Length: 374
Image 1 (cartoon, rainbow, N blue to C red):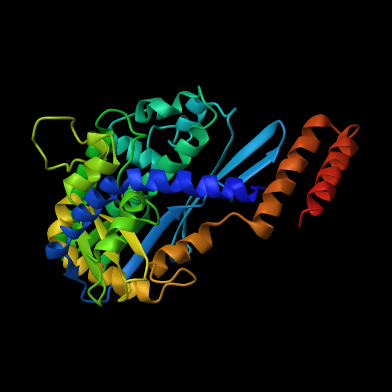
Image 2: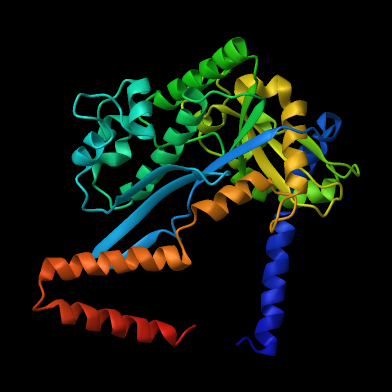
């Protein structure tokens, strides 16, 4: 522990660093204060809300060394399972890609349909991170499955009423090869336009993130400036100046409609906004991406989201549809025990009856050790 003299010295050192950073804070407050004229009050509306998300990597990892499994499960807010896969770092990626198609070449899964739509035949063509060189490819595969189910939900489903589709995360990604992500956005946009023309139904797509680099960087400045303190739910577009301050990659922040010189925005199909769904300054602020070409309908979209966020539980003023999808998609508790039991049973079958008791003993010893910390 620090003694009294060390605490005094530490206080002085921290104070010096904060004083040195005061000019930076003043600059950020100036950026945040400049938002005030563009802040818009949200007017609540009602619509069907559908959300989808992949279960968190911390909930669906199952290991019995050297065996490690990643359960990929994507479920919408109505509890309908849209994708279920089990992979491990030793899975053959070529075989996994072929599994997305029938023997005749027709796609059999949402991922297969997205690959066909983007004109790629293998997972390695879809993403450079699917080379298998790093075991983290299993998490990339999970993200690809989530984008595939989102693509499937918009491009291969009919809607009888105006619908807001919400993704847990921004409409930005660095996992796709070349310009495939922009191509994905173009296909989604075209399908939305076709739905409006054919069925007279509007479909909106948004991505909402609990934490983002730009919001964390500007959170204090926004609070000090009072830019969003107007006593009502509100939103404001994040200007390019703030994005450039928080992010290094132009291709991640530039709008797809931006044709000025510089890096092509190949990692982004969204338009970023700060949103507060509650009326008070202490209510949480979220970062929301609208589809870039739907930005003109921001008032309607945020109105629908706000109506859903008011009912949010257990996270206050966070869209309830995302929270419902999260609760359905989790691989935890009894579900996780079932997966672990199936893994152990499979290992017992592999080693044979003679050595199966060794597997049981190892499992029991592991459980006893873990129980100490419960």
